[in-house]
Length: 122
Ligand code: SF4
Image (cartoon, rainbow, N blue to C red; front, side, top):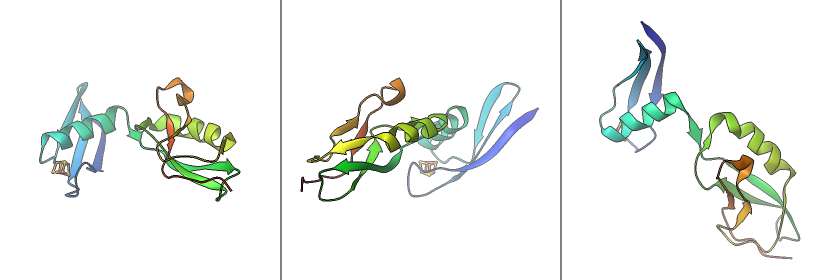
C-alpha cells in the first residue's frame, strides 16, 4: 500500500527536477529523478531531512551588532528549533574571521556554527 507520498523539488543542481517519493510495503520508492544524485537526495529527504542553518549571532565590540553565520554541515530538521534557541542566546566577541567557529558542537551533533564573514573590532 502506498503511504506518505510526497513530491519534492531536487535542489542538488539547477535543473530542479520534481521527484516523487513514497513508501510501499516498507520500501521507499523514488521516481522522477533524472540522475543518481537526485535519487539519493530524495531518499535522504524522505528518511531524515536536513538543512544548512543560516542566521545571525549578536556581536560584542564589533563594527556591526550582528554577524551572519551558518552550520558547517546540514542539521537534522527536527533540531533546527533547539539550535536556534542556543544561537539566540549566544554573543560572539569581535574581531571575527570568516569560518571561525562561534558555537562548537551544537547540541552534541558534531556540527559547528561558523561565521560567514570577517567582522572587525570597533
Ligand atoms: S535529479 Fe539530478 S538532474 Fe535532476 S535536479 Fe536532481 S541532481 Fe539535478
